[in-house]
Image (cartoon, rainbow, N blue to C red; front, top):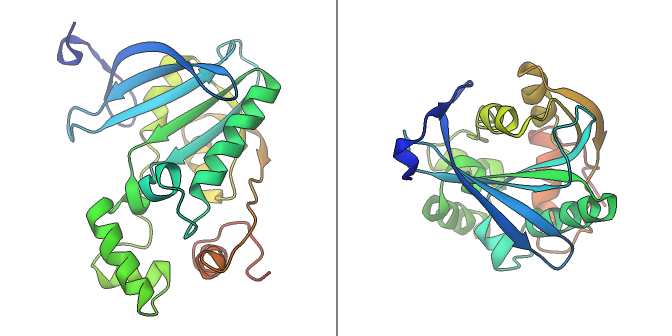
Length: 210
């Protein structure tokens, strides 16, 4: 059945559930759930492990796509290591969920992200670079999480994040955030300024300096 034949999952933003499959990884055998946003054509996925619809808080991560960090092992950000650490923690617990949202570059897209990186090479910080390109500092929307969580039967989470906006977004959807778990990644010379800017300008719960 085509995804276009499937009813939209109701929530703050309409998504269509497409299908699920097994996804064996280095750390655990996850189940991957595919969704599509018919308005934009963007595809989003969820990775689940164990019974996450039993009403108990689920160890969870909301992760925005970062091709450079997640797939190309860039040291300019902490995205790839955060995703890996979240998967490891879920595997160790034997139960959990990752929502992987296609919101590259805090919502500006991959090509604009390359332009933003160029501006950073010339001295701008990550917020200034986005703004010089005409974007907001963070254009991501977490309304996508609402229909995904409803479909998966998740009502309470232990959220792995340093970003208070994610906590507020879930609470606005009537999702209980039973615990917030920091995901602190070691700094390096390439991401030091990036992480400090996230702390000082975007409110992430990170120390602004080493």
